Image 1 (tube, rainbow, N blue to C red):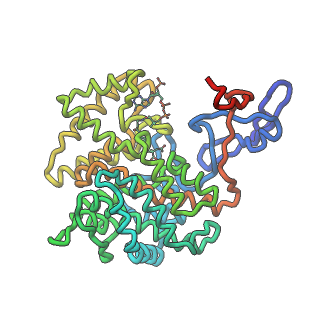
Image 2: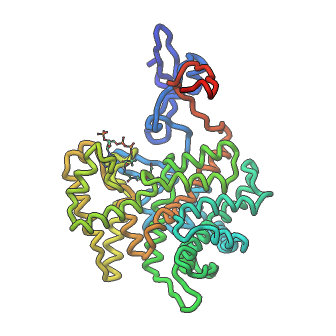
Image 3: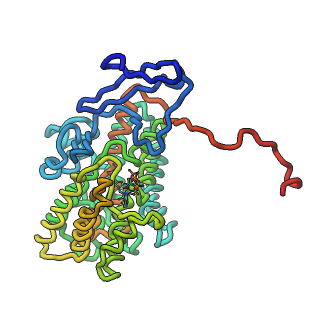
Length: 431
Ligand code: SDX
């Protein structure tokens, strides 16, 4: 190394200086932006396990120590003391809102809770079996059709108009998609209610009966959404940044993030965990069978809700959610056999050298599905709930990227391994 600020890469007899970029808490990276230009080489890193795509001041994770902080504030403190609306503001605008800022932000969320009536017809076009994530992504993208004059990502005023709109309307779209899937009339938002209460009201109220939101359920939902609100450069957030880097509008970028989140290796794992626990229950509760299958490389089955690219220790969010499952079930005087199976599965996995050697621990999705069950959220809505929670994180990253100034369109290179040059053979001559 030449000095503390520059690393050197030697290829053959040539040495290339690579400036070292340091974060505020220990992260250090090699700046390779000039590497190809200077040397002709690119780097190869499928899955981006060693690639920093941006600098960001939003969320800090120490995966070895199991630390997660939003704008410097530990996740455990936010889960205990904050609200989802306040945490959203913190993530997006970089500081905890004062009273006036919070009240203004909350009022905007209230004001924008309805969606255009025409959009209600869209729901009729989907089969009743449609997964709500398919509906959510397309409805969110469709929102861009209703704001053609406010879609410029480079105009901070237009962006600030869109932020409360998407935060408020995605919640309404999510609840309506559930109502449509069970054949009930949609329940319009009631703006006297707070953010989470209003969502529960739209989900569970029916026009024919009074509905009271249970404050314990609303508090648990609030906490769950906070825990999901951001997680730095995960797959869906990176997708939002990548799509946004082409200057696609906020709604289109968020819709892409929703699609990325849907996959079972990412946010879709919360649904897959509960399906796996149900399967174990049907098979008499034998957790060893699932563990054995997940270790068998020919099976392609992974223990859902286990493992993480960044955490090589407990995911701090999983700890909070597990404790909340116990608290809430205690308060509601309920038991859930799936929680017992989850606990046994975790215990056995943590004792197993396969999981210990690979540092595989429960992640955020392991207990969140069990908690959604307690909240009476239907299983196909779990990943929608994750989307609702992750929305402020997606917005914060999209906004940070556009305000950052050094943004370029996302466009990775490749190492081509195909045919060098091939002739075009006319159809009649092909075998
Ligand atoms: C989320 O990135 C984020 O921040 C995501 C997230 C967020 O908030 O945005 O935290 C949310 O997406 C949580 C993850 C939800 N997904 C799951 O629970 C699905 C099950 N988990 C895995 O598929 C996996 O652990 C991933 C996708 C989460 C991480 O994949 P990596 O980092 O690419 O890990 P890997 O595949 O390189 O695994 C290393 C080893 C492999 O074994 P070997 O080839 O070395 O022998 O561990 C094994 C893997 O086969 N392994 C597992 C396993 N996870 C990894 N083996 C069994 N069961 C598992 N769950």
